Length: 388
Image 1 (cartoon, rainbow, N blue to C red):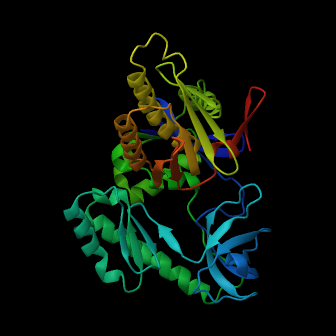
Image 2: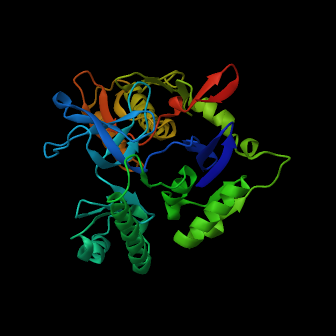
Image 3: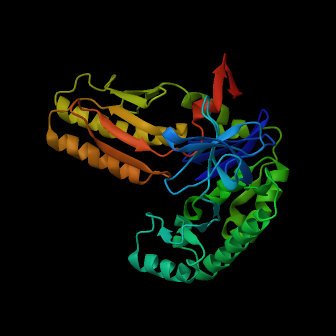
């Protein structure tokens, strides 16, 4: 896998490629306000009891939504520590949380006072070892062990743990005397987060054509993940832009199309609505001349399942997803299709779950929201790709 970091219009773009195919795009927000991960002293401006929520001012010209629990006893004008966890989208306010967490490359520290280990770490012996390594600290903090910790040495994990505890304690200490709207913690730039959150075992190259970002990433990798310093490079060929080398603009444009052709000649249609994403699988040219239509439909559906999971990641689609596969009469084929789709969903980089097949034969899925979908980051105007 390759991570490409470049500038497009006024934004920094992080793009992941696998076997020359664009598989994920992230636009780093370039404003000077705040972004996800920042921690503030906010002021409660309103409480809405019927939805058990509050609206909090963090001093950035927009009230943020805070979901409350039954145990919360906050009042209007209270000053509270909150962390930005989701950007504002269309008519929806940004979301903040009182559950503070700081992410490292191997661990995430929080206030839960327990240990959770990535489901992608399958080895039971390693899971027990990791839990034992962190157990003495859970009186004060909680930890999430990230996938990258699976192959990391224990000294590196302990070192990062101590660093995260120091950062966390500094935030709590600053909060005691900080004035309202103070920013207690500034999350790393989006391109640093992209490097940090990449799986070391899966990354062959990190390349950028921006000298300042190259220097910043180099400094970060040398300090936090020296195994990745050797795969970082600065692209300096001004005669052939990095955009052209990877075909980035044209591939983003293609990813905004509703229709996606499959290698077999079948295709899928992706429709995004306010309530859910609807995906329709069509046989297209593939059914022509085929005698065993049931087997053909199964083959199309399996091919479509693989492409759908790639498209969900590429387009960063989330929430409720409804898939209308080609109808198959055989229960065995339907069960096998769900099994294949569930296996693909388990490999997704964000939490994704195949719920069931409805009585109408529609497959229901859910996918966790992490950041804005592609269609809210870019649009096509004429032949030009525009950053929204």
